[in-house]
Image (spheres, one colour):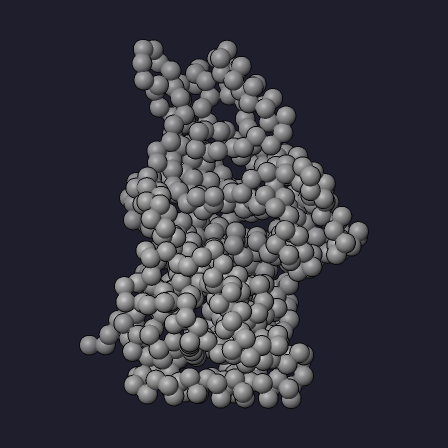
Length: 548
């Protein structure tokens, strides 16, 4: 009987090659993630990390740069280091090598020479593990997508191993529109990359809440009859960041992408597909991806009338998007988008899926809000309106699940009040306990890296899912790039353009606030809204709607 894959790979040598090893993604995300996995003994014992980039490093100087980077914030807490791991940082650095890439990836001869050097280093590292039962290779392309066509062909020709698996990891964006994405997919097929070799990363799919969504939907009988157009009024998928594009040092990149390409086309549309998909035949990656694809195929291309776009202007002590010297005055790049999608199938026809993403907003929040319809023949319609039921699945600032309900207030009389049924209290308590012990929560990136090593693709995007999502939004992107889409201003630190609330209201969505919704006060207008709510509740009138 063969060993489970997670045990099998521990008897095999693994080389992880990071192409673009000195860029922000590698230094801030990927390498620290690999270090944490190493310290916890989640990487196979015979693992090598090989950096490949244009910076002028040798293996020794790169290791020193990594030592400085990974030492920031102090050493790992004892609780995050597995028993038996002595001096994890120095032990991890012993497995690191560096190969310098050419300054111009488009120069075939110099690229070939450097990749031949890379192969020599790979072989040298693999020879250090003569007892290994296989020699596996993972190539992580932490490179701009427009460099991929220059790298993929020689990588396939020279670097793939023949004594174990060879996998290629690709980071978004996967193109700029349907045509460029299709061209990349065609190139990979022509170069004979197999789909089971390709791992297109969407970090949202590795989040705990995304996995919990699948379990919550299909492991709880009472939800099944509710999960349809007869009971669900609207679905909101929200991504809000309180900082601007420049705060992450990537404004030139962002101005080419915009919030739709950067967030909506991948993160939010993948979340939409998970919410709306039918029950898969099994938990295999093929069956799950097939059901997500069916959902995406039922969404018609987005129209300008379904969208509200915005750019942040100066506010709350921050400069506006176009005030940055690297952003042209003529830029049509949206920093905010609210988009209303329609899934035209039997389960969801008529239910608006409201996707909202923005930078320079008043808070950090990422969540899915599934709002149910009002109770027909409501016995309590003469009472103060407490808002409809909602399932809330929150990813940021803290992961949690809760259900908004209406209950009777304890005491004499019949007074109904909004309340929340916390579905993740033990989970949250466990997170707090681990935090107090110095144990960091399992990050989405760590889960995805382990999936790549174990060959599990359910949390990665398949080529046909990618094509379907680009098909939906490409007509809108062309209109935006041509300057044909209205662009509304909003002050940095506000909730976004006021026109967005009008769009959302037009869908029939009802916005109310409960204690766990944690709506921050961003302006004097917010204070006035809350004061109005207080007065009307005191007088027994209906509750004023507020924007979530």
